[in-house]
Amino acid sequence: MSWHAAFPQPKSTPAEITVQQVAALSGTPGVDYIVVDVRRTDIVGDADAARAMIPGAINLPAQTLYPTLPTAGLLLKNIPTVVFHCNSCSAGGRGQRSAAWYQDWLDAEGVTSSKALVLQGGWQAWLATFPDKVMKV
Image (tube, rainbow, N blue to C red; front, side):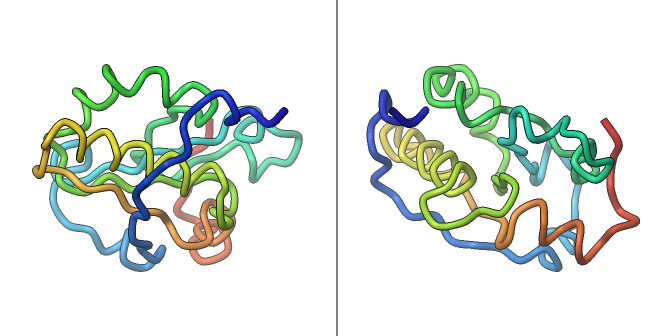
């Protein structure tokens, strides 16, 4: 059984944002926008590149995000742009699923002050485009 089988299928389909658009976001990270890295064990893998994140990102693993949405949602709901990503953000993957769960939570709560986006290509796209703009973990 897959890790997400115990949770509901997401209803929403958040839009994608490119790594260039994320790099160009203006304002204060954590106030005007935030990047949420939903990788878990692959964030601390054997490869040196795996042990890094997008600067300013926070780590909320996809496997535990859904049950913590009542709390995580309260912490994120006043941030206008919340960008989710996993390793590659492939269709139906952790990044898309997590962004959709967050957007579903926003919709259910009637919150319009925040929106979920998915980082096109995920961590791999960021690393390929900005190899010198990483935060070691």
